[in-house]
Length: 276
Ligand code: GLN
Image (cartoon, rainbow, N blue to C red; front, top):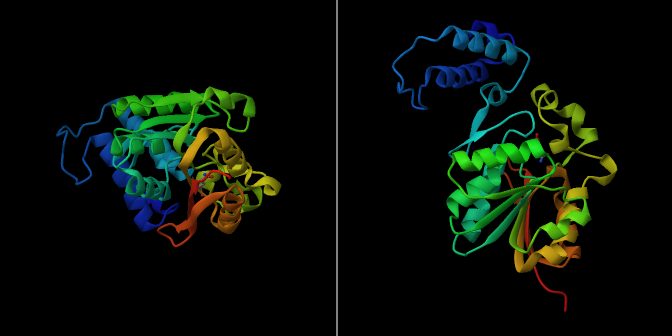
């Protein structure tokens, strides 16, 4: 503990240690002992030693232990994928609240660890879920996460910016995406734990083309989103109005900008209508 206080404030250091102890000693969230044997093997001791060493280099604890929780589900993470954020849980909740009743075909673009697709499938069991990502390592991990959670989801390595690959995908009722949206200009405001460890491919877009993924997804939606189908995006808090205008210019209706728990513009939803 003492060792970490030079690097983290008291509360953070405590919560990081709790996570490590739970992981290494098999304690449950409530502190109940699920594995009464407190002895660590030599290799576990070594792992714990390196874990603390890594924390001092601001390596995210989720990468150190290789897993995190998202929407009460265990999700494995590695350096090929972003660590799922609490805001993204809110995006999933928004979709579940709005869409629970129907039989749906849902596409998650830039699925990463698969967290969105997995949480949706778990909570809307009759929906069919597809997740795509440009990274084969991400797709491999997402598939593993779906399997570990006993959920049936189709994952495919696919680059949404490459139109030639679009015909590999069918038609959907809902398209959801948390694409890269941090501009390079915003890079220097980011923390080292993000900047030095999370995949830049999943985070950053060029300053002069910050909406590149949203534009591609609207274009893709022309033929791959059904009439009255919905889009749900996580967005850069600075781009809310721009993305709302973009959606309207693409004939989406009922376009809404939603705030996250921190009061920041974080999500955009909308419905597709036919152009008459
Ligand atoms: N919300 C993430 C962050 O600020 C970024 C996620 C993304 O680019 N899609 O680190």
